[in-house]
Image (cartoon, rainbow, N blue to C red; front, side, top):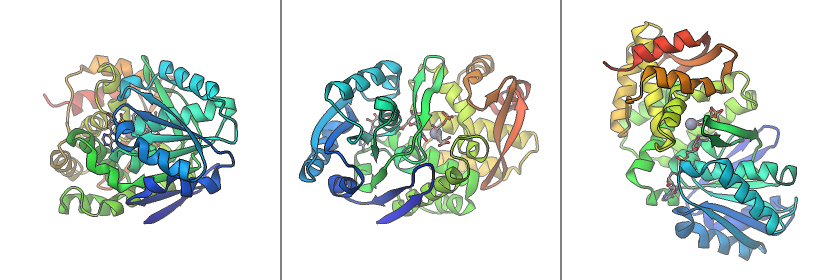
Length: 352
Ligand SMILES: NC(=O)c1ccc[n+]([C@@H]2O[C@H](COP(=O)([O-])OP(=O)(O)OC[C@H]3O[C@@H](n4cnc5c(N)ncnc54)[C@H](O)[C@@H]3O)[C@@H](O)[C@H]2O)c1
Ligand SMILES: O=C(O)C(=O)C[C@@H](O)[C@H](O)[C@H](O)COP(=O)(O)O
Ligand SMILES: [Zn+2]
């Protein structure tokens, strides 16, 4: 088992290993003063892992309730959030009790947000179950739900009390959900790690997954420690997201997030190579990885639609926007610019 310590407004541990869900109660009990647990999960994950987590919490002396919502990004909205907050109140959860977010990034973001709002904040333990959520969304404290106007527009920065990444649960992922998780892993390679890129190129998907997860979480830990509130360097974690989020919004949130990120990284990188802002290898290697991990490389949405949707980007300040662009393989940088430049990127990055 790997343990990574995150240092932010709250310090906490990310544990990575097989079988950790069965130890949820034992590992969280010392961190939570109360003994009332609310497991938040979706309609796919709860039947698979709900009983296991509930039993572990009950063995550690917790009284356990659960809130289950229909799986998918289309549930990550203010309606579900209010239903969850109402449930926390009706079950009489207090400030010493805890929310346990059992599921992918949708569950983690929404349960984390509810925990940060209810009674102005109660503890949250993240129990990520998708590949995307173990490598990215469970760590770093961004919580959110979507609005029809844009992705993650309602949220807080609130760090969890503990993150348990149980690698056993990855066995039940569908190929499509596994693939979208690889998109964020490829993102970590592109922004900060030539070593990870080489590993992904050389190995079959799934090799030494614990190392891959720990590598991504370590990169995120280092970035978040420098800029928890997303004012500067943390924005590098948004590589592929300005366009990806715009595609997600234009698709009525019917895509998986990682698919949008893959398309966003591809469009941005192709444009940067064409503008000679980075070497051609940035695109050829990214294309090889997107193909290898069965990820999409473009969208059928128009430049105008995407530009309009991109106005909801959190990196916008008035008419200015910061783009995250590859510099060399394994390194991306922040480029403050404007929407005319984003239009050029979209025009150059979309294949004819
Ligand atoms: N907070 C952050 O830093 C951060 C980072 C990246 C992404 N996100 C957010 O995370 C969300 C995407 O997360 P996601 O891709 O995990 O989506 P998700 O939570 O919808 O999970 C994807 C699908 O996989 C299913 N699933 C999850 N674990 C499973 C398992 N072990 N076995 C079988 N099925 C399983 C889910 O039920 C769902 O149908 C987006 O909303 C995105 O904005 C947040
Ligand atoms: O943790 C971060 O910071 C990230 O940007 C990670 C992203 O993968 C993630 O999708 C995040 O939720 C996007 O944040 P947003 O601020 O653009 O909504
Ligand atoms: Zn993301």
